[in-house]
Amino acid sequence: MALQANKGVDLSGMRTAAKTEALGALGMSAAGAGRAGGLGGSRQAINNQSIANDLAGKFAQIDQAEQSSNFANKQAALQAQGTGAQTLAGVGAGQQQQAQNIKDAPYKGLSQYASLFHGVADKSTTTQQSGGK
Image (cartoon, rainbow, N blue to C red):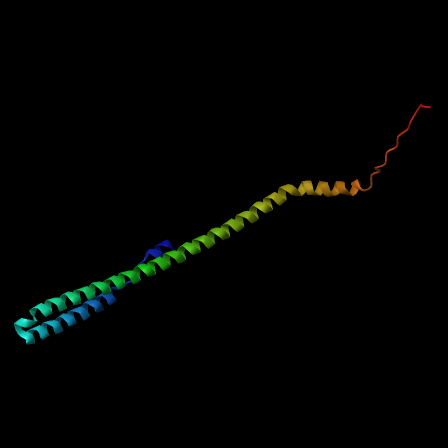
């Protein structure tokens, strides 16, 4: 279960889509700069930086989604392990109680047998005084 929880989600498709979108935007930026001539160079540099920042932001979102998914998987695995440990603890407590009951059985039997005679025996005592005035 721990191995399954550590297994990452394949997000290469999302990365490829983000790269393709960025390359398309760069192509449009280059075409716009070509039409603007020399005056578009600084705008193109700003556009290129903006596109690079956008791509980095998208990659960060993809990484964050993967980390979130891995965290959720690990939490589920730990919860399952905890449930298993609780179950084993319950089984162990039941086994211990049964073992104790088996060891106590002879004593309980004798105790119950003795209690039958406990109520029957005469509890009265007599005292005799001898002598005196």
